Length: 600
Image 1 (tube, helix red, strand yellow):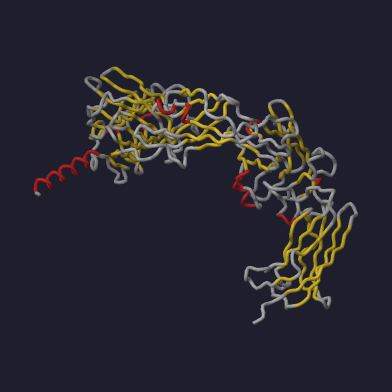
Image 2 (spheres, rainbow, N blue to C red; image 1 turned 90 degrees about the vertical axis):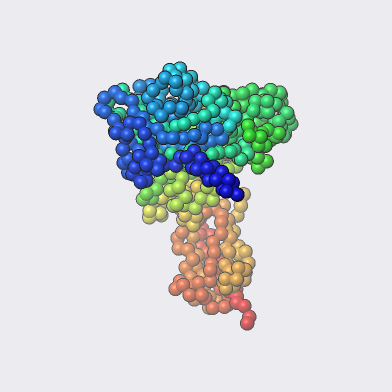
């Protein structure tokens, strides 16, 4: 029994020294754990390990004991107040058989280095044998903002078999993306972990910062997933997985199946060297605007974990070709509320699924007529749907009712639309798709305030610039209808009607007919309505609407309260509606209803 306890004690001690967890919150790097090396050239500032070397070309390093090398994971944060280069760069020594990271004689190590030509460079994984440096993996470039500095969190995983996987988040958070992996088991043991700073520009002496170091045992227990599938052409699809897979499995065409008659690919090829991406060549082409499903089966990762059954499918879609008038400008908000944002709404009147990524947007009436990209990634707009383009989707959602929030696109560089006049124009390359010109005078003449009121397109069968085809959005809908049908849409085949959903209602909050629903539909747009409610004796009890601009169709509710906010008595009530527009059309409606109550 004593021998068993001694063994467990030694094992726990070994595991304790084999791990690292240091966020420098104690303001010290000389204890718990102890870092050695150029200790005079580093300091902890606000809980962050910061270089403080000579103000001349120098090499600085710190290292700390670590014996974890296989079935291990490393995490750390790197912050640089400069763009790294081939002469100004950091290294993170994941493993090293020597404490002095500046020496080369007899050194056997693996390290990550950040510093190459270009402002989007990513890490390289390097194996060091003395003075021989072998880059075994170069991660793909990643754009960072701003490009003049770096704030990146890194996670590295390595199996006992020597399979490396590297993940980064260049915002400094923990939303890691898999950047690449490689198999290399040349060195299986280590004694130290550390940081190494090299700079030839003297001003870089205090611009290297590190934090949140963690090294821990790691065994892969997460099943792989199909990250995404991108259609390259009608006969080619790129498939990306969440982690690298053995070639024999991901290169087997029988592990991939498509529905809708596409079947199994004729060929599978690796895409790059990371082992998590392949290109499928299809024997049967994808049909444009017909959504299919790709299913991946019988694939495992290097740990032998089978692909997650809840993450082994992906939609496959080849959008249709966009022709003029295939995507129409539906609504524009240019005179915004305080703290608001412009938006342009577009509509797909076709039966095709189209990709907004193919379009650009401009304001030809502005001083800068530059065409602005709508999206750098595919945004599929399905038939008969409305999509909003804006620089600030969150603000639009705060200020208006957005019935379909997923149908909003954040445009990185939205054209400016001034309050007096402007033009919205959609392009595919140099071909104009649709154009809408507006002026502030197009708003309803009786509106006292037009700030925050959008102009809506009345008819999609007429040009947007035909006189009268733009109308102010109705007050009843909040003066804008982002992502759904315009309040002033035209339907010449209807008659003016106002009907009650039920002639009886009981506002007692029991969930059944608590509101009187007044449904309406008008053949013309731009109507103003006055709706008053009277008792059967002719006493006015509620002014439900007074010269309010109305949509061409919708519902308005009465909650049974009078103008003083009190519940009306049980009885018979009369709803009178007067409707008119600036064209001189008028209409009058009269309905009766019963306000009821439960019998006790």
